[in-house]
Image (cartoon, rainbow, N blue to C red; front, side, top):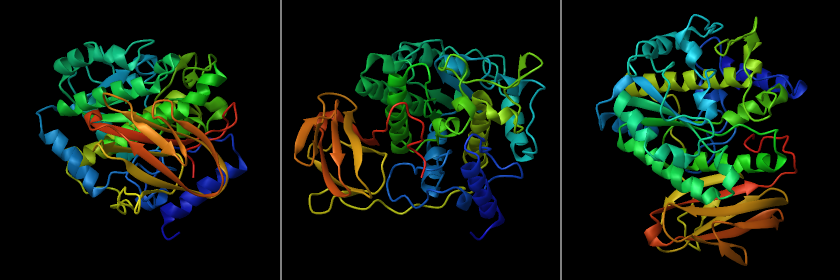
Length: 416
């Protein structure tokens, strides 16, 4: 560890190991965290690296985001909220508009806070706007039935916060959720709006649904990485909190309360023991990174990553060197070959969802199945072959390789 920031991160990790219920502050109060202080830059895949909360902004991703911004004239100081009750909640970001914000020394975020406080999102700033694209109980399809288009027309936003999936999992059809999220993300990008995507929070109200949270979060991760847009691993931070950052219903995030009133923008150590507070800080941090890179044209904060290994052929397959694994690829009408390396025996669930049309055919070892349901396999340590045959008419497919963990889940599959 060469830098002071890196040594500080090591101390933070050791503190977590010694006190597993303590929360790791998702920011550096002294200033922006150096790229080397967050692990994951070694991951040699197209997917976003595991083991960090905010996805990297490399020079290539920065150039892409600037291209999106230059494609349409939008309000650089406006974002919209897209999602379910977690995004409609008054505890999500509205406190940034008031006088109860406690940055606890994070003065480097002040300029971004003031920028969006001055934004015009239909007559109010975007923090307090009652977005038409959020509602209690909404699924991805709810957003696509007109509310998203209306919200985009009314606010002309440069950015959007996007978190869905908690209600979609009730249907038990994750491939349908994936297709609808594809449409939402592409609709935003076509509008010149950069989505900030997020994994969903854990669930203590239903152990069976809690088992599905990693899958729906992997879908969001795959789309974010495939479209080179920001991703926040919110669940990663929630797993570190007391009671996993959940309210008494085990379904929604809790918020820091002082004198009987919610203080969602209190970023002291007491505030950051609560789910909504953590989410608010993470989104302000990501908006700060985007302001600097996309609006101000500053240099990308993360280094370029090594290219993906493999060509997708039987003799030179794409390499999967860490699980969970996600990737988004064009459906070329011919099979893509992968090789996954497991350091120890593992029970994995492999799936392949397509953007449209007939499902992909998936093969793991000698077993073949529809990509929708996927294949559950107990695999020994070593190398194993995976093949995805997606019809050309599918447009794109996403491959999801996930570990199956004991119920209830009490460990973070995204942690290194």
